[in-house]
Length: 377
Ligand SMILES: *Cc1c(COP(=O)(O)O)cnc(C)c1O
Image 1 (tube, helix red, strand yellow):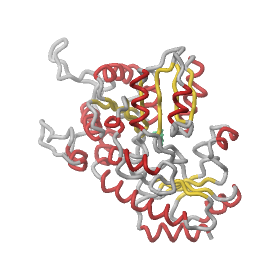
Image 2: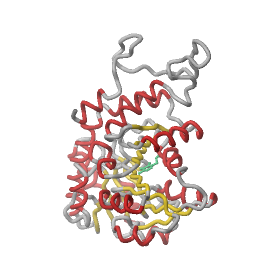
Image 3: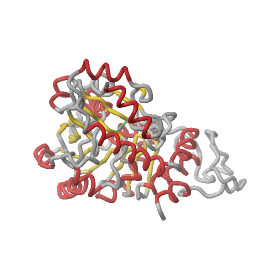
């Protein structure tokens, strides 16, 4: 079955009670038990809820996984993911990772004796060198945020298998429409569904997806124990959003490609970061492991002052955090999304004060190009 067909139908049959085509929002917290222990698989909505089950089935199929578990935000999913680590364990994480993931490991989990090393995972030797006897998990983003560097998921998964390490991939930027990490050998896929899967900047959510029965059992226990589940309403909204994921991603990709090509020729732009450009250092890996390059484009101008004045001039691109919605957004990572990363570490990783990140929406490309053109003047 093709991606769009799965996105629209997977997990969703007409409601058995009414034949409603669209799954109902089951707001109930509790369920009638005909006698002790006799029920239809639902007893309390933190543990299981029919609307959430439909969503989880749908998202699992889109990632070619067996199981999915939905959480109240992307970070709630990543926190749940991290509970596979016990005191004394160690994780290796992409250095250009989502700011909240960095903060979780560097400023929170460290107090629970969980150690993390941040390395540039686009070079597998950096991972090999960082492996310690207590390493349990490798967590990567590809592409990363905001520098859009690409790591070879299949190569890293081979390394993980030979060393008996778990590999998790945050696939938020690519979405299952463009990239399926489980097919490339990853053990766990994470999404912030707040971004492209939601797609309309109106819901927060996260999901973990896997094939392994053991991982599912473990994380189902974690989901129920931590309690940070996705609400029935947000499950329903996300199910609706995912139906249009394929058409949205095609347009995000097309618009982002045109903008990246335009920026690359602009005299005021020092550098453009987009995996779809032949000039991108890992262009060939991106092409090998993904079916598209996504809607995120970053570019660098001379300094903070210039970046600041450009940001003020945008008319369609709106200055805001977050990404992945139908509307175009622009942000300044150094002072916004990545402000929690110390300046010297940021600059060492190439995230300068002149860096601007675009979340390219699905508006008309002529309008977006005109907006960038006038803002750069
Ligand atoms: C936004 C984001 C997260 C965190 O998700 P929330 O839903 O904001 O908690 C994690 N990873 C990536 C790549 C993100 O863009």
